[in-house]
Amino acid sequence: MAEYSEGYHEEVARTLSDIEGVNQVYFTAGETDFTVMAHFASREMVEDLISSYEKIDGVKRTITNFVITTIKDEQIPIRDFEFDMLKQLVNTS
Image (cartoon, rainbow, N blue to C red; front, top):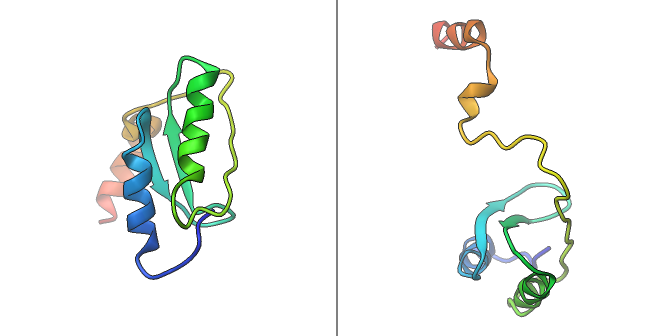
């Protein structure tokens, strides 16, 4: 969660993106302001990541979740749709 101010999301997002190991940064709506995806090989690396978050000006609080098992990780979202649905979407535009 970050402190709201004009343009804060761009500055905080850029800072989050620059942290070593961070792969994806999303500005979100809801209870959190940003979702950050990172991949690490050790607990120490996770601790360093959280420490990096806490050093960012404007960051008020972090919530950390860990993926235990990946169920689905589709890199091409169009693959999640049946052909008939895709045809219907194309025909309505």
